[in-house]
Image (cartoon, rainbow, N blue to C red; front, side, top):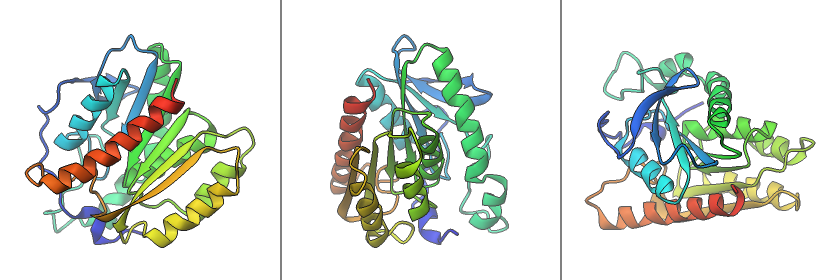
Length: 245
């Protein structure tokens, strides 16, 4: 189900990072950024390293600066994956933190955000989080979705999004050229399925020379890595600006 690539380059978690704050929302601790008065909201669903990753929170602040109310929930209840824990490899950790449970939690988050007055909600998922966002997209719970270096997303998932009655939420897929979790060949299959369903707005983009996780697990001292990540961030923001309104 999962290979080691999704666990490479783990971030140094920092619960104090970001310009926002942590509050409970939908039963989960969540990092929130931006004005709760905004009626446009974006939910960011993390990779296995969780919601305290500094680059993810930095991205949340960037999205908030564009006028969105941004929520980054702690789907793992203070138990993110720890690569150094040899007694609990990724497959064992996933038994406690499956994407099915993540989806159930995400539904509550969406309802809580609606309760704060949001009339349009988008969601972006990173690695593990992409599968959670796909499940939200299948039900029409969100206005638009973005999947960044997705894991666990299948051809059947994309077919369901295209064929489920009434679900036409736009979907952007931003992938890496060097990715064993979602290799370019798989993303091209996604693109073919989406292209055949003209009523679903879709974008599939494969970024050259980058690896799985590049949008949130980059070295801030590496100028080229930062540039590649920021290009993906800009693409994601443009997508939400176009469809979450």
